[in-house]
Image (tube, rainbow, N blue to C red; front, side, top):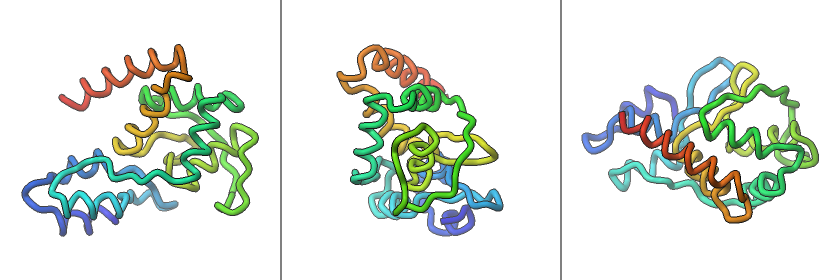
Length: 163
């Protein structure tokens, strides 16, 4: 959904800024911002912004790549959870031909599946809904020291969002 479409449907119970924070962050090639339509629809039906992201097979594969730190992807995810954009050179993949062997392939897959947003040569976590998912992955016991870092980052993010 575009910003204009979204503003047409918002009711009194949910502000545009709240919907933007939770579900915006995807970009078209002309820099138009897009919202996650499934999650926005659910939020409008329920009257509140919550995490409506559904678990998928690809997210589980990506979580495994992060957990096993394939080609140091975990460090990139930790940076993005902390709000730091990560530079990357993406290749033109389709969802059917993705390999998950190198950093660029893994990050490209994450963009194709909508788990990351790519804009002007940088990756970021597109919205709060997905930020929660990455925090969940990074706070698994198997992540060890990374869990402590993410916990601190989460506290900082929550303090920032409360402003």
